[in-house]
Amino acid sequence: MAGYRRFFVESVADLTVIEGEEFRHAVNVLRVKEGERILLCDNSGYEYLAVINKINKKDLVAKVEEKALNECECKEDVLLIAGYLKGDKTELIVQKATELGVKKIVVFSSEFSSAYMNDNKLERLNKVSVEAAKQCGRAIAPKVVYANDFKSALEYGREYVNKLFACEFATKSDTILNEMQGSTAIVVGSEGGFSIEEGQIANQMQYKTVYLGKRILRAETACIALTAIVMNALGELK
Image (cartoon, rainbow, N blue to C red; front, top):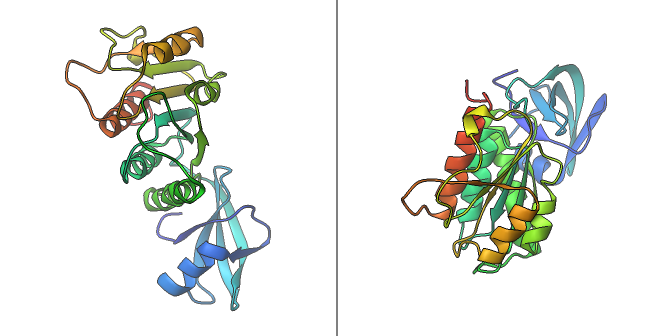
C-alpha cells in the first residue's frame, strides 16, 4: 500500500479516530482533506487502508476499507540495547535502528555513562521512532524504553535466541554472526564504554562477545554498524 500517508494509532476499528500529535500533524502539516485515503498502523504488523470521513476541531475519523500485512517488517525479532548518549546521538541511533528493522529499543545508563535521561527525552525518542517508521514504510514503530542500570537493560534480552555484547576490550568474537538464526538482542555501550564488572554481568547472563575490529568506533557508529551486520546475517537485507 505504498504512496499513502501513514499514521500510527493505539488501535484500529471500523471507524478509527486520530487525535493528539498525529491529528495535528495530519491537519496542520500534511493538510489532509475529507475523502482522502490514508494508512493506519497499530504496531501489529498490519496496515489498514482507510478514507477520512470527517475532520473535526480536535480529531478526525477514518473508515477502514482494507487490511494487509506490511511487507517491510522483518521476520526475525531484533532488540537493540544501547547506552544513552549525549546530545542528539541517541536520536540518530533510534532513527537508523528503526529503518533497519529493529522491533524494540532499550536505552540504558551504565557505570561510565555521561548522559542523563528524563521523561521529555524518552518521549522525544519515541517520536523519532514513529517518524522513522513512517519514512521507511513500516507498520511497527519500535517502542523505546529506558533502563536505569545495565543489568536491568540486559534482562530485556533474556529470552532471545542470540544475545550479542559488543565491548571495546574484546579481542575476538565468541559467536559466528553469519551462522545465526532466530531472535537476536544486541548490546552496545555508552561513550564511556563498559567496566570489567559489566562485562562479567553480560557473560553471566549468557551474552556472547562481539569483536568490531581494531579501530575504536563511536558508540553511535557501533550501534548502527552492528545492527546492519546482524540484519544482513539474519537475511533481512536480502
